[in-house]
View 1 (cartoon, rainbow, N blue to C red):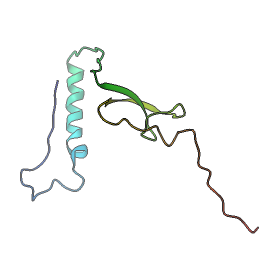
View 2 (view 1 turned 60 degrees about the vertical axis):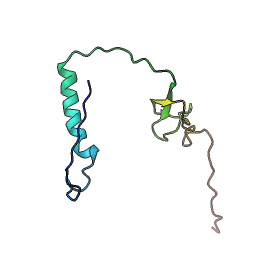
View 3 (view 1 turned 90 degrees about the horizontal axis):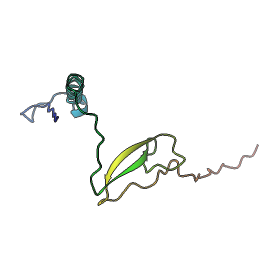
View 4 (view 1 turned 30 degrees about the vertical axis):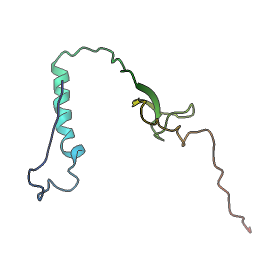
Length: 106
């Protein structure tokens, strides 16, 4: 099943309105259609085989880098090994920078 939604005007001098890019204009239409399609058609629930050259990495949901053992929330993402892979999560790297306090007179 393939579904694409385009919302726009043929005249570039006219606008749909402020903030009406794909996420606000086209995505709700696509989501409504795809939900109805999956609810009405019996699609097989087969496993997806990962193609050669693609690697699956755990990504930190808070820091957006490659998850470390300290990352509390992670998600799987697929990457082409031809391109640089994400660096480890800096937010949960296990090292902390200690902020120096200003000396106080009192």
